[in-house]
Image 1 (tube, rainbow, N blue to C red):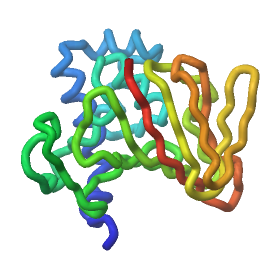
Image 2: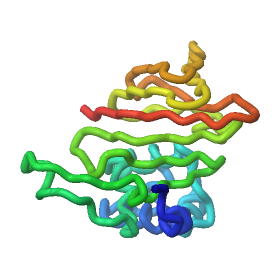
Image 3: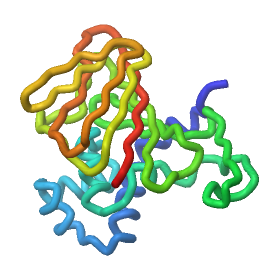
Length: 203
């Protein structure tokens, strides 16, 4: 079974309001967040109103500035409640079927989908889909954030560009690096979509 089309159709519309809700919960003003991100308050407002979709790098910078995990962005209210027998922290289990998870569609057509059935403290586990010629930051700026990243390509090829190295990963190739090392992720193919799974471990 595939994803519920209603989940996919509404993801873009709900991303902005969800980011605004997270900002308000953190007590951060729109202007303060804009200064932290190095963009205008108008740009932040456009993102939060769903007029502008953030890039991968901008989204991660956004949640990092608010001090919330990336997984919090996925809680849009459309996802079905996971199956299970209590909370994960009680050493029981939770299950969420693949068609019950709303993906997040970002600028450039990049899609993120959380793979963990519920938010897991200290760990982000998600899938990224990069269409042809898509990159993590449309402005070409390197991203750095907290944690340690582990990724495996499951389809196509992805290029990880560091300040002094460029690495191309094919199917089943994997990489690990500290997120504090500036990086850009991209799909340089003109015709093939690239898919990878990522694990980010926070300190």
